[in-house]
Every structure is written in structure tokens, then in C-alpha cells.
Image (cartoon, rainbow, N blue to C red; front, top):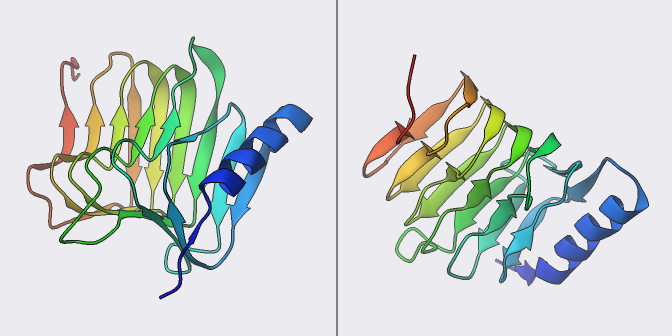
Length: 178
């Protein structure tokens, strides 16, 4: 299995799309790719792959893999679609959350596969009004598949599959559920 570290390329592509226009997407082609440092996602820039069985991003560092938490609340969001994000192996998973989200109007995940993490697959850290998951697979995580720790969130789940979790599939921590 050949894996190439795409951390710099991916971050540069996100930054270029964001500086060039207000919205756009970065494409992750078919193959296995390593991420060896935090990827900071930008407002309005989505990440899309060739399918969760084709585009595989392997997190090869400790800490959060992808962060979309603008410094202040923003009226926009981003989409992650059609790729997988995983720790380096089932026996030595990444030591933190795969994706951290907050301070945005929306965040959508379509046909994603999240696996092999000692943290949560997706953690909502601060206000996001709409968090949507469609056709996603969450597997082999130590904390939560989806962890929501913020108030004022609407979460939409459609065609979800949760496998081999150690704690809970979805946790609403410190959130008033109605």
C-alpha cells in the first residue's frame, strides 16, 4: 500500500480556493493518502473525494485531523463528501477526534466513512445550527461516533451505520434535547 503525505498539498489547495473565491471544493482523488498535520478547513471550501471506498485519508499524527472552527461565528459552512478518514490502523488509531466543528451555520457529511480513532469521529465543539449526516459509516472509535457538546444544534441523520464502537454512537453532552 502506497501512501503519500498530502498535508501541505491539501492545506495549500484549501487556502487557494478560499482566497480565490467565496466558495468552492477541493477534490481528493482515488488512492490512499496520509495526513501528518492538522488540516484547517476554510469557510465555504468543501472537501470531496471519489467515494469512501476509493479516496482514503489516513491520519498519521496525534491530535485533531480536520478542524473547521472559525474564530467567530460565521453564516456559512462546508461539506465533506465521498471519502474516508481513519486512524493509521485498528491497533494503533489516531489519538484524538477525526473532525472538530464549531462556530458555523452548517456542516454536512455525505457518504463518508470514519474509523479507527481513540477520540470521536466528529465532535461539535461550539455553536453550529445544522449538522447533517447522510449515508455515513462510523466504526472503531473509542469515544463517540458523533459528539455534540454545544447548544442550539439541529442534527439530521439519514442512512447512518454505526459499527464496533466502544462507548456510544451519538452523544449529546451538556445539550438540552427536546
